[in-house]
Image 1: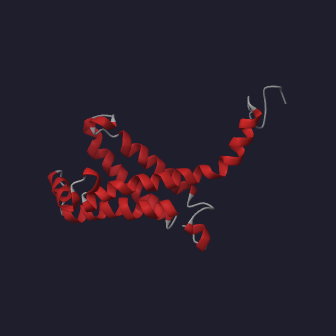
Image 2: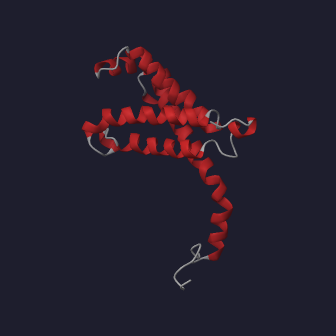
Image 3: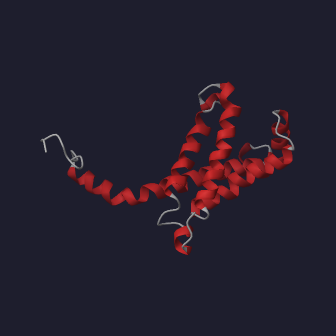
Length: 156
């Protein structure tokens, strides 16, 4: 083995290497919980009109205006996925099926936002891509050790 070949990179600051190693098991939990918690307010916007949202009626009208009919059904399903599904991701319950549903929803959201370009502040596709990739990470990893799925012994 040459001097450039190592099985693991040597940390420049050894104490940080120990810190990263100790925190590494929490990384998937941070991604899962953050993904779930940040979906919840979007669902609350659609379901309840919270956080400046339009509620079911307003969301349904907008969805119908872009070709998703019946708008009320789509608004309800999307709102429930974001609100209830977000809570389920947060606690790690039925983690993979919920993550798969979020990926499918975000794939559709990308197509809706694509004409607006990349940047999220112009209603672009950046955020649906990002959240779809976060959900993909959760799908691949599953609920993990710190989840209800793990606690009840069910993994999809």
